[in-house]
Length: 328
Image 1 (cartoon, rainbow, N blue to C red):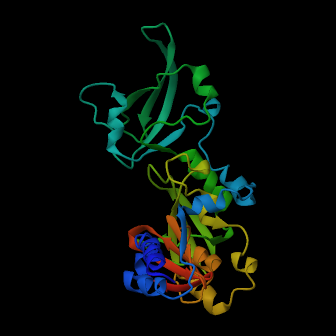
Image 2: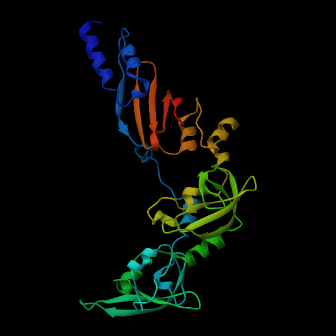
Image 3: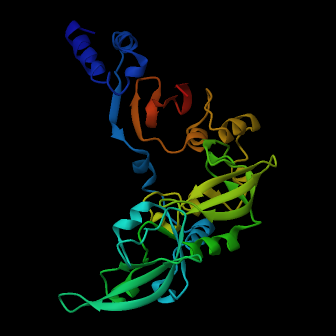
């Protein structure tokens, strides 16, 4: 190999220093100078979504069930329908009956008193929802939807900002209480409501569904396979409240372990604790850590390399499809 060809080869390797910097410049340079070596090539950075976009999307039983956990249709709204107040910011959208009326506080319940119609300056009759607090000392408020009845009926969901539809929570409680499920996330809450890293793919029995918060309207409480009580937050069906954490994302109706009989018990223990170990496959890492934020790929004459990058600087490096290095 001539010096001119060696220099070209070295420059080709140095272009890979940014996506593959975890191996270090020294290692790449040494490889580049080996005689009769064809060099390393890399592909553009891709995301895990790019990898999975070509897979067929089918509706699962979990997705069908998730679709049931949505607010009631506006056509069914009635006098006395309850809404849980999630934030004092509700004062931004309500009009009190008088200047001295205290605005609803977080945790209070509002009930529909009546629906009425008021024409705006264009002549359009907007629906006004009159609300009262639940309790002996009732306070009255009005929420202007700025929409006609027909417009509201045509919408998929109608919500009062900064509230959770308690009828929706009650329906989820009836559907899930006492049911055995398999949890798919390790983002759990303890009995005090503090988050911690639990386990995934273990059986749990739902004991209750209560109101959550503005983003995740459901708090699902369960007993795990060790008899301990924990809970997790869940969004409504279709992830309409900003975050993709609906029933299908956090629970399975069947035992997930049965889908992977080829995975050893030792590796499965790592997976349920969200741990990575050397020699794990891409499938096993995906089960343990979820989808990476991005993927870097490259290869030399002997091996294929791939680096999966996760949030907070976590990465996993594969050589020929098996974990070689990781920082978690």
